[in-house]
Length: 101
Image (cartoon, rainbow, N blue to C red; front, side):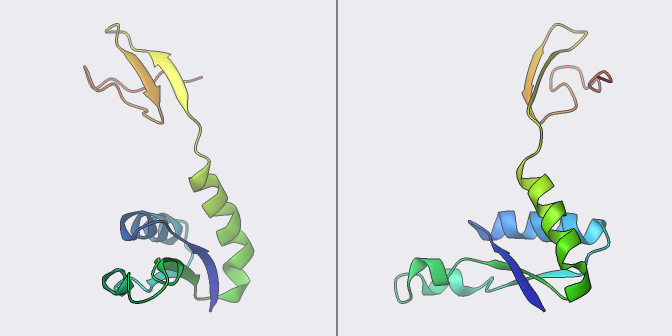
């Protein structure tokens, strides 16, 4: 097992692990319950960590995590007239999908 990254919080760590698993990478969250020890231990030692179980998948996991952390931010106008910004691919006004680029 190798440590891939520290996450800023448990929610982000869980999202990253689920995304990595969807890509076929065996990953897990470690230190997920150390948040309760914050104040007794240094804060940087209480952050959840992402660990990759198979060392052979580590490079693939690094690339996948980099892609997750740098998702494209878009700005597009929906056919209903709503301006949609950020990483959204669906209009929150009418539910239409983003047109192909």
